Image (cartoon, rainbow, N blue to C red):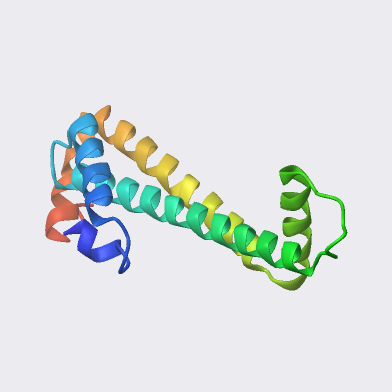
Length: 141
């Protein structure tokens, strides 16, 4: 179900399912709340990998564009310089890299927060009523 919810057309749905299955196997959620945290971690990790692909595509496209604008007799430029020029020119025309980096940081925080929540939940048996309220929507006060 998670694969159908977050995978875009053309994305490797089997890779997403494998990511989720591996996380579920490693974390071994004991109830619905823990399962929700595993799903959150898998979704965030998938989105993070998607952002990396977007960044790669943007920079690759910018490198190709910059190469096409170079004078035919210009000396060759090494990959590091091409990448630096791509960052510089893309950053001047677009906020895409800023948005990607902001989203990547948010996803990293969400993954870390979910793992902290999972560990806290597992180490605090008195909080098991939270799991019940999570499933039923009833908050026990």
